[in-house]
Length: 567
Image (cartoon, rainbow, N blue to C red):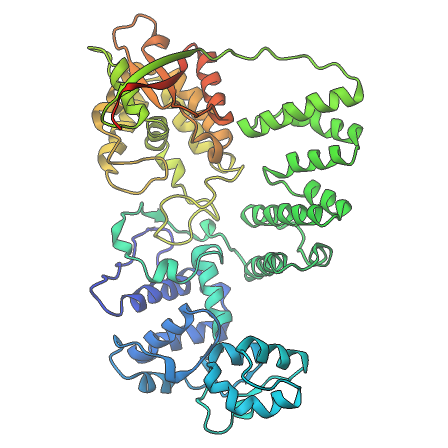
């Protein structure tokens, strides 16, 4: 396969095909085999080849079992009428390694999940009576007795007799979990997230999948991810953080894996703090580079009254670019620490956000933003309810090439609507050269040509910043006519400081004044607040930003005229 050519998405299975889920599973298997063959052992590659050579019905039945929860199944309860052969026939080629184990041993919990009370009670009554449980006990009571009497796992016929329905166990889940990880880039998504969807409902940007763009460069990196995933599972299962801390691998060189480790350390620190292990919490939070770790670390130091130490960490943090949320959080911590340490802090003059108030009629019970837009609209001064849509769309269309540049760990398969590291702190840094090249176009009319061209050529293709039905060509043209490119440059740079937070919080309404003499006054912004609503921190951050640019921006508080509102 030519790894340097743009990967065209494989043909999406039609839901009209009753075995569409098998087609989608084969997309996954073939994709991983083609792009990650060197990360599979010879044995695993042989299993993949064997899977693709199985009879159709057997592949489909195996796929159905892989998609279900757990590894144990009763063949008599496998009913899939869409199979081209009966379930028993489809099962026959799978009844040996590497696919299935016949007659596996079952612990009491697994036994009780597979069989009904009526099936269990006759065979288990002697054992239960011996343990002192008589009468008509519930299933839960029976299981409790088996667990407390330390019953060892055994085959089903030793539990329920020779006439019991047989049980089988999937033995290939480790392989398919590895395939799932290399395809999705995570183990959060289940097979159903991909296998049971209509892939043809969206159009995806073709991305070049070269060896250098792969998230996993070595098998050891896959193993590191699996180890970290197991650590996270152990956290969720309630295991002591101190025991898990010992098993967390060292920081990987791979930046994508390092970010996953940072998140794991943040979660471990949170749990250690909740459980009272403050020393471990401090160590984990200080080690993590996750965007939320620093604030949590400082707050914990505050609670421990280690104010001097917190102050020393706080000072460099205040000098860095940061999101609105962290800016607000750090400023609040600074005030508290200054009081504790009897230090003076130079108070920054806060921008006063203009406010207006309207009492309006709303007989049609329309959203408040629509009512205000209609009220303030004037001839030759159109107003649009765009909220987060417009500036994000301008960003997405201008920087399309940078957004879909295949840096390592950004794209795992051809069905991404955007890069997986979009909300990571190093999203911009990893693409700095391409972003800076496109930022430079804002110094001429070149940026307008790029935005127009992408709007036309990319129409309908999924982009995390562009909502196609709303972003019309006329709206884009009006915006580019009225919003100075210097303002776009500033907005886009602020957006890139923290994409996760800053792509929301934009003012609800934008109005255009094409004939205004001052370029900064050719557009104005209004954040609308209905009864009981209040300004959020990230909304205040954007309003302050625009006011500092010299833009006419305000908050409009609306109340309804009770005499003119329909009941």
